[in-house]
Length: 278
Image (tube, rainbow, N blue to C red):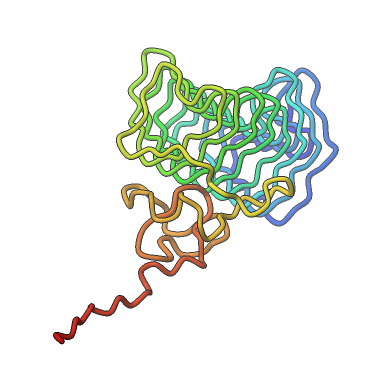
């Protein structure tokens, strides 16, 4: 039935503060966790080095709904490149928030699902796409999607909002296949082999090195001089970042999963210039 580590069917399941590693499914989905027809809350776990033949090397959710937040999801293998997190045909809104998703065969795949909010995640070094959506309405806000071998965000048959995301150093940045209705704005799309494919940049999109603190060590916090600071929109932005820091911390929203806590632009005092007549 799947679920190499944990399998839930027609239930309410909470998995929290656990280590789920080294599990495998054959001809099935959910190498680490599989939830079918269930309400799943999956928070604060280490989901590492699991394998699935079909869908969701780390987590698979089929029908039902899910809250997937604060997990470390790394080095999971999905043979068909169908996501370290895979959500399909859910029947109620779901939320994927503040997960660190590193070095999996694929990042997040969402297909024919009820509306999903994807926020504050770091998705990096996947062998395939960072995030792929098909026939689903998504709010994709304040994520950092970087260094994925195939692409950043891909969408087909989707009506989605893509805002406040850092999408850098992927093969493509944002790619769309008709029919799509994408609202794209306030992103930093930079350094991809092709920044936009079959879609157009948003009016307030920027294209600049986001200046991560230490990307070689998977530290995707923003340096204090990052051009992504104070360049986001309040519309749809989560109230905290992936560390739980308040958003905004300064006067405006930062782009990406990190809200920089060293920026002090709004805390500065600008004294009036007084000129003396001689």
